[in-house]
Length: 508
Image (tube, rainbow, N blue to C red):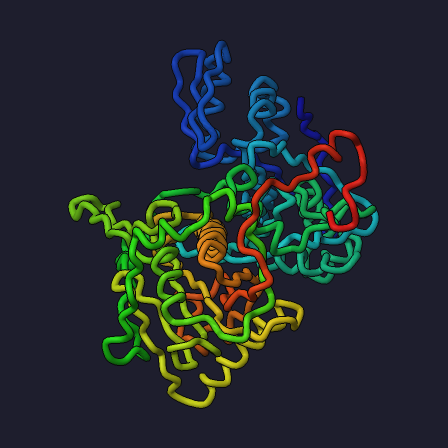
């Protein structure tokens, strides 16, 4: 059971009166009283608590409307405190001055959170390297001046109600005592001590000794923790948070740099493709990244078939115009969450039989290439940067023939999905990669997915606003050398060696 520390009030020094420690139920918590019983409804579910007693029930209802002083609860409502210890993730904890003006509030954002208590950390303190300070979007803050401290390592969000609190946090970007940080922030020692206690109890300080997830980069751990439920309390999934913004069209319209009707591509014949393709298992087992090319480059007809089989729009599924959540869905050969169809494919062509070098967008609905001519030397220079970045991504081993840049029209996802939109588009990139690999292998082409690309160069070369549509994947396609087999005719594995406890060999 979580134990709430009930330290005696700090003595008033230097003209400062003791700080108050306030508890309150989260605003999302609904308390329904039925005599001596209550039902608690909250973002994580609902619980029913029996035989609390009418006095405790009344005090619990009061916590939905106003803060309660922890010291008074400790004296008069021991039973209520025991209840809050059972459901600490429903309770906010605030440090305030004697008049109730808040300094900082710890808000639990994960069900694993415990009441932070009011420990008084001693010695030198330093902020976690995963902690970050930001402002909430308009309308989400508790007051106009609030900012929040968050960390993927912390099961709390710390709302800082005063600028001095933010300055105190900034002071702990290097190792200091609470008193030193308070002095730099213009706070009293008591305020610094109380705020340091919230930081420690909330999980925002570095405990040292290599305990802070040493194998994680900051952005990777934050992305992981915020794009999956469990470590935050933000609305997640298909919540349609942006219905006030028009949904992007299901099929991308021609861009400003696209001229004329484009290049209509031949549609492959079904019977020919089915008769020619190897079996699926042969393709799966033969799939590999090919980083060498034949002397003759890939052809326009080959690109046309690859794009048609991998990325075309099969059909547009009309949404119900009377449904505020309705939108047109897109069906393609690869799966996509919500049929959003947000991915686009651009071609940076260096060598291709039947196609001039340059940049093209694949019009997936019309099965057409739309040229994007360079309008000034900077765009052509960006094209070179894009191709060079692809060359570097292969450890400088491949002179690209055709680079496919996969972009995401993010608004197609974020209009519907919250917290998971970017994670979802990366999942879509993964299945698109696999589909490219399999079809290119079946066709006898040389596929190679890349692990990185130049976002800025892509935006300039392709003529995109990177905050609206940006590159999220890169894939090289070329002509396959005659000596590289495209299929396998048996399974390869390490099953027997693994079961026997033997080594896997130098190539494993």
